[in-house]
Length: 536
Image 1 (tube, rainbow, N blue to C red):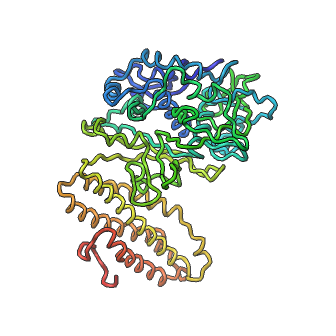
Image 2: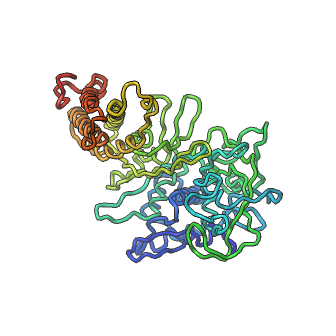
Image 3: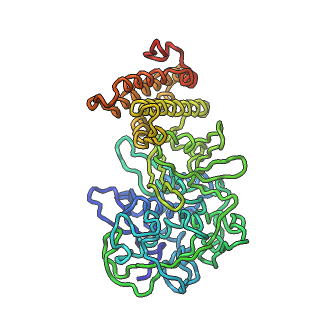
């Protein structure tokens, strides 16, 4: 059965009602029943598909329905457009969103690639790393519904990791980090609508500096024309050679879904029966190689003085990453630059934070080791909006709090190494306690944001800083001592455990947390450092 990703209902959502059932809608139905039973969330079977679908819908709105300025943006935020209005905006581009048929196919090469050996459809999924999935068995024989195949295709093209010789990475590099601004529930626990979530990440044309014009479709959607291939000697594809909006629709991989001989069955991802499962696809290397000054609006970047580089997840996403994701951080190189959709909310034209809205940051992406996916990373971080005159002070304080936490984590790691291993034990060299580090950042996160909120709310910034730094030092002291005791586990100490070495390591941990480096960083006096040991 043909599928058009603009006109046909194909993705699952949740509504606000307690009896909300699984429901498929088309993109133009996002605002349907918005006053009585609004759509509140995407409901795909996989977290990476939810992330990919959110980017697909934001890209669709940015391409076809971009507001001219902040006033128009705010008008649509407060009074969402009717479904018929969205449908009329989307329909001129519908021919670019056919998944099958004799013409251009969504995110697929125009060459049928018929002479190439087909691959199982599972190889489209990034977490399979090109082999059978670790989580779903018999996926190659079961196949995917057209809707799930479309999501797998878009997720791969927009996140494409290294794939071997000539298999290009995504426009943002392999496994980019995506950061979206989302509304938090209000005081009455009313859920924000999906329209609000998506619209918070659509930029007005005045801010963005470009928009889609009539006749731009072939420059925006690369599958509408012959692929710009990248064999040896061909230069990378830049925004000037196509259209900056191709950032949402980049197609680095040459892929063609095999739609011959579809058969009925149950989709291996969402478990629903379908009459035309897709079990195979074909691919060829040397697709589009993106280069130059691309700036994806949904991704933070670093700048080393020469070029912008997209940020990529490295392990968990938490408060240690917070500064570079929500504010520019220029004190160290490379410079960190938040995503455009995040930084624009510092502009007072977007006065949501003045009107009582609470906003958060939804950050997600694959942590990749070249072709190998290590993990899917996803986190919700708070967004704070201090007054203009306090912003720099809050940013500096946040940096110092994170730097202090990193020092105390190093002290904790060193103390545990000393407690567990003798000085000449070769295991000291390979000591990499990732589980301990993950626990540290997760378990101190609530305290970090609480201290930061205290600083933002304070009337006297200087006094507040002094109190917050002292309290944070006490927090870290308390946590590292408790964590040391937990990981050493005194109940299990035996003669072979070297209790004297453990006691010395614990004493040295306390001393390390009072050293001059930490004291200088947090601008603390001896009196301000509670419990300062005489031996420190």
